[in-house]
Image (cartoon, rainbow, N blue to C red; front, side, top):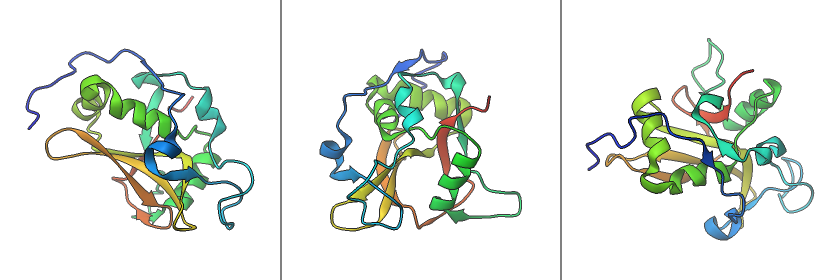
Length: 171
């Protein structure tokens, strides 16, 4: 069990691993084309602005749920629309995996200790599982031992205020 604070100082900006092949690593492909299609043809369903990010600086990110005051939950696909309407950059899966693979997960531990982050998704990459025609996104969660793991979630599932997305900080 992780009992000590690994990162006491603000982590240095982390270089994003852009050569990582998400499809080979996970078995998911990046969704292509419109939401109502089969996900096999057309442009990749990604936030292209996220690919321009080469370093992750904890001062330039935010974790938001995008719920309105009178809402207790919404579908994740609605959250993606709100991120876009807010003009935030939805950070992509390569950024999440870079955080996960950082030695000792220093930045993730710092985010937990200093911001209370225990789980988040990366909305900038929409995925397709080869055995289904559903859209997914990856999420990252802190387990009981203090280390972080990756999972995936279907975009038709509801999310609550605890289900935050990794996005660019407001300008």
